[in-house]
Image (cartoon, rainbow over all chains, first blue to last red; front, side):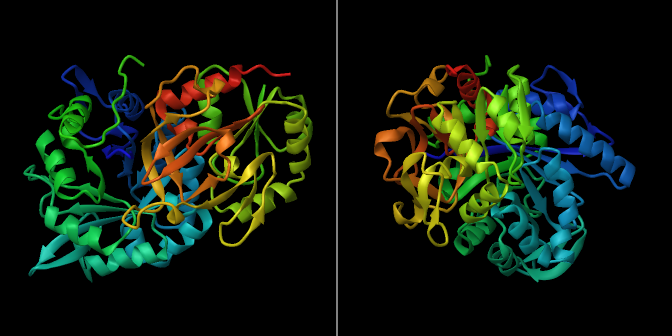
Length: 257
Length: 205
């Protein structure tokens, strides 16, 4: 049986993980390579590296970090942040990324999804959408959630899948940072609209939030989070055990390896 | 030395890094001479079957790959590389494969319930069928990483492991010195590395 995936997301700037990470109460870790390795050992099913650098020089550092991580960590790696062209896909795929996540870049140039899917395959193209309710309608936001595009979210996501996006990350801006659980209503609307894997993001505060997510919405394939893992509020190994106990298929990793 | 066949398809970075991580000498190559001198061959692949089959034929490496496999050199096809080992594929038409293992590649959609998503993507448990030397360091039920929309059919005799996804899908195959995994060992954590190590250790003639 296919397992539900747990995906930590790392924001990387100047070659370091932003804010540093208090890993499992042991010490602060800010090396993306080291952190990726620790997460992989504790049972993370995939990793997302989010590039929040601005300059071209910094981008070079990010690419080097990615290359080093991909040569040491053997689980799927997704890269997001600053992806605006097929050349950007090429740059990160050559350094060992398996999937590339597009967000604002696809909003600026909606053809990018199809071009990338044709060149690298749908399995490689992840459409990530920052979604927020505005007057009761799900709207897509760009530029890290700063700009309301006015687009209705479900039609945008449906368009992305038709163009060839192989997976969808739904980040609910309404529940993000609140730590009171995932946005089940929004996720259900997306799951009903598309037939590709859906990754839930935004709102995880406790182990129970993940269990509620997978129990309420069996169509959701994965849960993504950042700070709850980084600050040790949820240990991935514990989360996996609890999922299994609740009857949710989870990959349990032998931590000795 | 393990030769990773570079015929212009797929991302070979992780595969090469995986062998480095387990201390095995591996070389990405498009040189038939290197394939001949290697003691093992990896046939990788992602994307569409027809495109990959055409590129392999055009690369001029296909004859060498076939000759080395028939000479008994251990060979491992991964993902689409595994599908290429079969007689034919029905992905967007009907296309010929290498014919090293009898069988055909068919859409998963034909055998799974309608509410299962395509592709089959993520971590799924291996169920062992016929014994296989590639599994010497792993256990029944260990999970590996899959991404595929087509599966190897009509090849029961050669199936060494399956994964359950609304149907028992072929996960690994073996016919003599020719091995295949539908999943990506280079993306399957320690379980995947253990499979690659086992492949690096199967006797080479």
